[in-house]
Structure formats: structure tokens, C-alpha cells
Image (cartoon, rainbow, N blue to C red; front, top):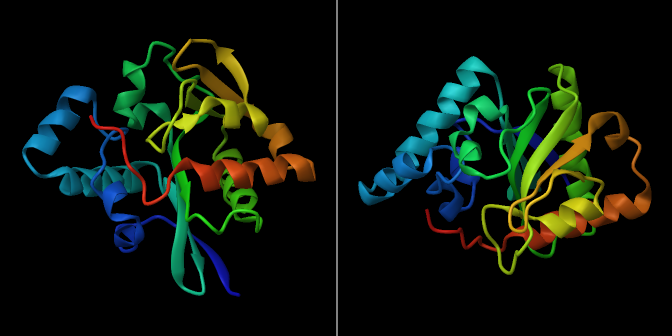
Length: 205
């Protein structure tokens, strides 16, 4: 079984799930996001956002391929590139951190180490760029697949709450500990990414 993790580019953007390609939840502020959806151009806005981040910061995601079939992806960027993050009551993301925006793995592929590899790949990339941590806004009331990751799963894989909130706590993963996680934590990451989204039903803007 051939496994590859490839940086997200405009060329492989079509390999993201269709609904994810049309989602600009993180990439635009709430007002602009709603306008893009109403105008029928969210895919163009998504492409424009990825293009701008690629030019200014570099790759902001990874796609996982198994035998050349895309089975998952993770998206991340410094908070300055994530307009939606300022809309959360627990913002802002720390200056020394990169924001984990969203992640997804095809159901049935968890438990094979893919989640661990994805997160460690992000951690290594973020460390190489001089950041100290990964932060994310968790959904403390998560009930179904959406753009936010479940807070309880983030906590289970090593994130710590840095700003509590009944709905949207901000959590942080210190990168100095990321690359030495124990096996049980690695398995928890697989469960996290496997449970995040099916052919994801994204939260409406």
C-alpha cells in the first residue's frame, strides 16, 4: 500500500472533498463568507485564498494519498491568514502558534497511523518555520461533522485549554512534546481525524 503526504497546492486542490472545496468558513470573515456563498463563488474564493497563502507563506495543508487515492487532508495557517478566527469569543490565536483550521480522514482509514503521520507532518513543518505551538478552536458541544474539531478529542490527543468557553474553547498543543507522543495518544489522533467528517457536512456560514 503506497502512502504519500503531499503539500496542498492549486494543482491538487480538486482532490479535496467537493464540499470542502466549496467551504470558505475559515478563509473569509463571516460577512464576506456569506456574500461569497450567495454569489455562488465560494470555490473561486477558496482557490484565491490558497494561492495567496502559498505565495506569501507557503503550503498551508497536506493531502494524504493511499495508492494515489486521496483519503484525507489537514489545513493550517498563521492566524493572520484566517479571518474567521477573529470572530470567536476566545480569539486571538497566540502569535507564536499556527492555527489548525480543520482536518478530515475518510472513514475506514483511521487506526492505520495516518492521523499520527498527518499531525506530526504539520508539527515538523510548523517547527521548521519557527513556531512553537499549534492552536485550534474546539467545539465543546460537537454533535456532528462540521468545520470545527471536537474539543474533547483535541484534549484527548494532548491539546490543553488556554482560554475556556462553554462552546468554543481555544486549545494549544506545545510542539516540543508533539514528536514524542506515546502510542495511546497516537491512536487517539487517528480516532480524532477519523471522526471529524465523513463526506463532510459543513456548518453553514
